[in-house]
Length: 305
Image 1 (tube, one colour):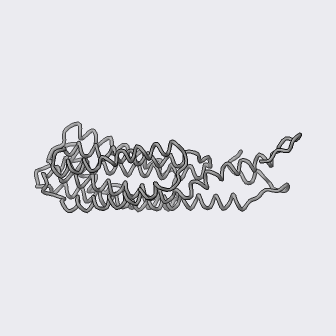
Image 2: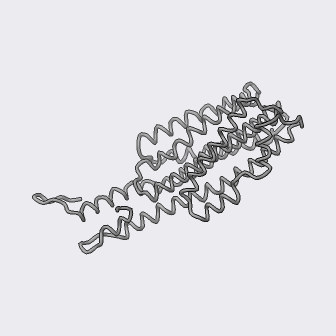
Image 3: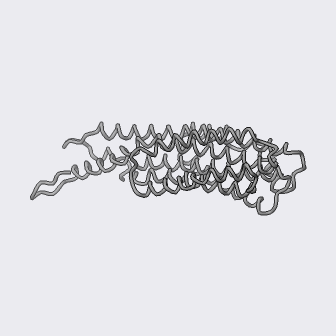
């Protein structure tokens, strides 16, 4: 905004300045879509590795050896891809601090895997370690939208992050159930942790749904809610001890929750694509409407009362 000596900028100039300030973070956000995708893919693979490692540990190495090996390879592949994305210029010290914390956690992954392979850590210890790594990774996502003041775009970010948080709680529920069903025993602490994850994911998904389009809501309802078999196993885990069955129930639980997580991952991809489309549409709209003296300026700002 140019201010001429002896004059004061009028409404048009201030609205133009507002548009420029709103466009700047949108312009920075557009290239970060690849980073959001990279984080979500790595998170999903780490969730798979965490679940497989828990079954492996609880079964004393009898179950899920191939799944552990495969999930580790996919984590390494997606981690390498994310490292390449981190080489791109990134805005803001706060975002860089979140990335540093995530990378610090990921640097402990080799030691964690060695402990799992050698069965020197318990399943609950491994789960907590994986979950801590995932928590730092997920914390990057909301920081990407920190400077966005467009309510339409901000709402999409809230929806995406709520979905990712809810999905992580489903992953933790899968891991906790796998531990209990494989061991054939649920103590009071594990049961309470299960209940906390179930309640927590419900709260996250309610926020997600409140910011979604009707078609996404329908897809979530059809594919991402726990089914009757999952609910039955939830009740069994929370009210009585499972029978000893050589891990059959654990594998059934794991398969059911894995199918649900895969549906959530598909919806996550839809939410990311929807967010980036909304960003591009808003940028196009901002660039299309250049103001002149005859514009109805307020019509460009529909959220101003």
